[in-house]
Image (cartoon, rainbow, N blue to C red; front, side, top):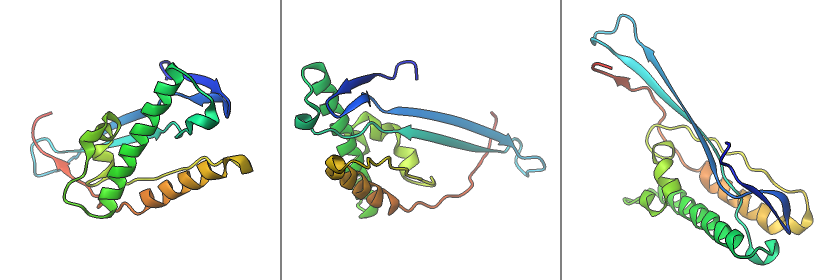
Amino acid sequence: LSRRVVRAHAMNSDSSRSHALLTIYVSSAIDGSPYDSAAVDAKITFVDLAGSERLKRTETSCERTREAIEINRSLSALGDVVESIVQRRRHIPYRNHKLTQLLQDSLGGSAKVLVFVNCSPASASAQETTAALKFASRAQRVTNSPGTRIAQGAR
């Protein structure tokens, strides 16, 4: 979190300029397993996404404009992945952005996904709030098959 950048713009005095990911790995040995060294492994990923930004409303320039464009590009790629999963398409475009590559195993397969949306009560932010809620609604339709896989072999 020490590398997380926050800057002010016309809409937000503490606007995050990047996404934050925190991954926790947990491993537990299984006593009495028929395998030599079986374990249950888990991965928990917490993701705080920077909000999408309309450049005209934020009144940004130069470096902040590039940051906003990259934030919007990553959120668009994430939206494309979510839509592809929901539509059960054969090809899921995980490789279109580094964010979706990092979240690939969290979005597909045996992961459980929870989404929390921070909405602004300001009427001036109604468009952004509506867009965020629509994204959350799409993400809510992602269905995976959470389950337990036993890792076999030496650790």
